[in-house]
Amino acid sequence: MSLLLPQWCSWTLRISFFAIALSLFSPPQSFSKRAASAAASPKQIIFWDGFEPPGDGAPRDTSGAGSRDGGACAANEPAIHPLMPARNFGLTLAAHPTVFAQLPETSATQAVLVVTNEAGTYYERAFLPIPAGDVAAFPFPLAFAPLTVGDNYRWQLVIVCGETVEPDDPVLGGWMQRTEPPASQPQVSQPPIEQAQWYAQNGYWYEMLAILAKEARSHPSDAQLQSLWQAVLTDESQASAEL
Image (cartoon, rainbow, N blue to C red):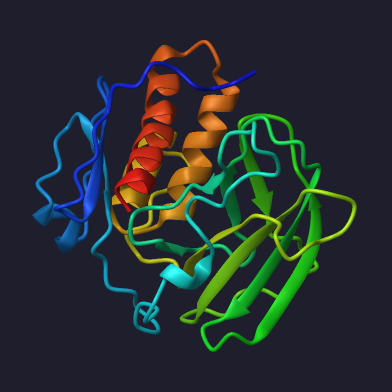
């Protein structure tokens, strides 16, 4: 079942964060100084896109991670693209994170997940099935070597349109850096939306996205959660159009 609902959010690229309207939830009590400077509203989740990574500096060029509009396997299929912020770079706490892509109505059944370091050196590669649904989650296989804390990694998904990988298959991707868990990290006992809010305000794109995706999938009748998830999809598609 598709999670797509009527659009209601807008994207502002002149500032390096996006706001997702949220009602009835209060923000967590501890924010980073950068997040506090974003003037968070009690009715918003804000992804702070201007964070400074604690390890290596941000990748010099994130545009080479694959097209944000990766094309499609057939002319009559909607374009595919990764779910990534405008900067195409986010932090993660996970040794084996999950990446997401919008793959509506694709005829492809598998993808190749390729991970390289910032120098372009091969790190890991695996064929993965494409799950059903407009939004596909691709967890890093546990057989992959854990991401090293402080290093930047580029991930790419090659969408295999036929039986084998071809040079013109769509490619999409993004960047990530794994960090040590900060002392202010929210507890798992906190409400999921509060956790997502903290991760968003501190640059942890992949944790924020995983929580929101799980909550939207687990509560299909919760209009508020569905609207919140749809806001992520809507903002991302608008950002791609702007870029």
